[in-house]
Image (cartoon, each protein chain N blue to C red):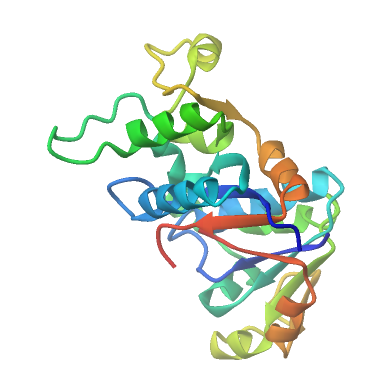
Length: 116
Length: 136
């Protein structure tokens, strides 16, 4: 059973995205198929060269980079949201791919979990 | 489709910040009265505040942690607060109190503290997993 975790909030302003990422890694750790979809302001998670140290947070880039190593199948970004927030293949972290049709992505997973 | 389904309920919204615990409790009561089974309740993120033994609302208001714990005990439903969410937010049982040499513990029975693996197991064993979030 594949699970899609959807993150629709920008990083650092709330803890919900981090906890959603933990859920994704946990599924992968138990050999359950899991994928991440970033949409809306959530696509900012995928921006290169994040520097949140001055606000007392760790960059989420490292956590995301670890996701494929832990067995997370896909890191997907809503192409429309990427365009809106000025994210391109060049300024996006490696390992993420854009999807044009997010409803097809949502429908292709048996379970969809939104970050709280 | 079977007439009786198995559910896991995940609560991520805190009491007195969101309506999530109340909505989840009303839903859980309806499930039980309709003959469905609740495999477990999993508290995650801010939802862990529901398991605090120290919540003390005014006496003329609903006491959501107490009402939830009574419902769980009456129906023998296991309920788990995520350990990572709980420790960050200051919810600990006696074992964690001892481990981290803290001044007290505040986990309300029958809630227990355990890892995200409990949530994963719930998603594998249940027909439906329903999420109660505080905000969208």
